[in-house]
Amino acid sequence: MQQFIDEFLNFLAVERGLAGNTLLAYRSDLTKYCDSLSEKGVNGPDKVSRENITDYMFDEKKKGISATSICRNLSAIKMFHRFLVRERFAKEDPTHLVETPKLWKRIPEVLSQLEVESMLDETKGESWQRIRDNAILELFYASGMRVSELVNLQLENVNLSMGYVRCIGKGSKERLIPIGTKAREAVTEYIEGIRPALVKKDPSEKHIFISRLGKKISRQSIWKLIKQYARMANINKTIKPHMLRHSFATHLLEHGADLRSVQEMLGHSDISTTQIYTHVDRERLKSVHKQFHPRA
Figure 1 (spheres, rainbow, N blue to C red):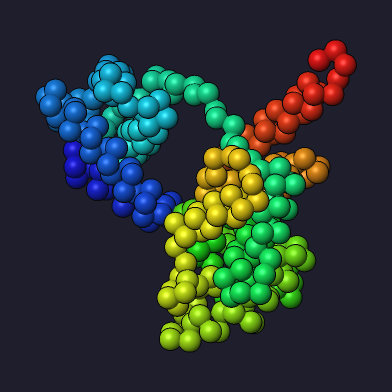
Figure 2 (cartoon, rainbow, N blue to C red):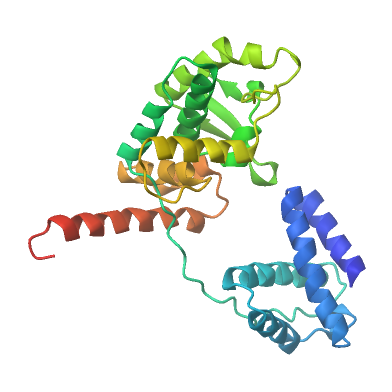
């Protein structure tokens, strides 16, 4: 079955433009699945039955694999078998009647607007690091980019005079995101006053945000600085890398932005992914009602 996995991944890379990390995850999931089939004597696409697939899912559950991972695995298996039928490597799709378990969607934790303001206040200062970190956090919160998108942002991707960034997201999909005055001012101050000294050893460096070593800042460094300024602002929450992205989306919806616009700015291919933030807003309203209504 390995040859079919290779064909499938090549299709995803060429036709769908999926990122390298996504392709590696698919390869891992499908290799494990096909190895399991081989152990049971199933060695061809047309020999796979619905029972083989459901048995595999139950075996994964018995091993203690999380429901989220099992669903991701099943999604890869379904795509794989649809591909096999479409390319005529198999006559039937055995996943046709296999249902995907409905998972409880965890509502992402967000920062309040006051907490974001407190964090940004902590980045104010005259040192090169404070000016850079202020630009990072202002742009992160203003754009809602993924951490990976933020660290890979290059000079040519930012138009500060027009007030937007051109972001290259998952699957090499491009989107334009408007940014506000505060972010524009912070990034301008950093690019004009701090960045030239950081890239002195390598002026050809194109990435916007640079470490003290003159190289592109890492995702881990972004996470660390977010945790650092949250701690300085006395925010007692478990800080996660995408927390500012989640806060960006939630605050937009709280102030009346429409879901489609938020979806486009976040770069979600499916609006159902964006809808999780409407749940966050509803939870906030319930909390306010419970706190202030006399008969709550």
